[in-house]
Amino acid sequence: MLRASEYHKQGYNCAESMIKAYNEEHNTNIPVSLGSGMGTGLGVGSLCGAVNAAALIVGYLRGREDSNEANEARKIAKELMQEINGKYGTSICKELKQNKVSCAEIIDNSYEALNKVLEIK
Image 1 (tube, rainbow, N blue to C red):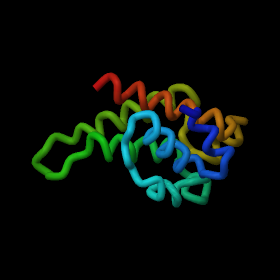
Image 2 (image 1 turned 90 degrees about the horizontal axis):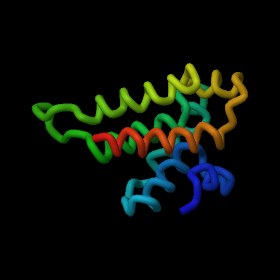
Image 3 (image 1 turned 120 degrees about the vertical axis):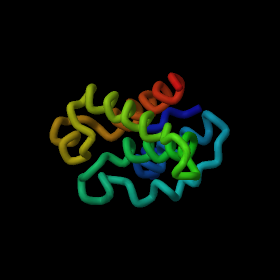
Image 4 (image 1 turned 90 degrees about the vertical axis):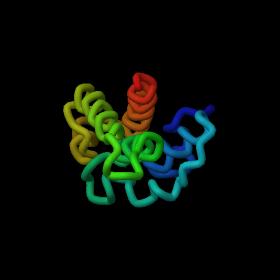
């Protein structure tokens, strides 16, 4: 299994890298294309694509299909955001870059945080 950041080196954006790595490690089939519009903070330096993809994976795995169901995915996504923001003080792509956080670092740390919050549940 390659580290998620290795897929970024192969030309996938940060979000696609997260999804591809998750699929390969966990034998899921989440469409990598779901991450295609998320790279570089949705193209404008907003929410980091790696973090965004992690939340998307949470929704895919733990999301609900009916409004009467408890929203477990929202609780897990909140924990994910607390992990990332606790480590970096931000999850905004532009701010991460200003703070000299590399794409490889945020991708791999977001991937680790994703696995951690999913493991807890």
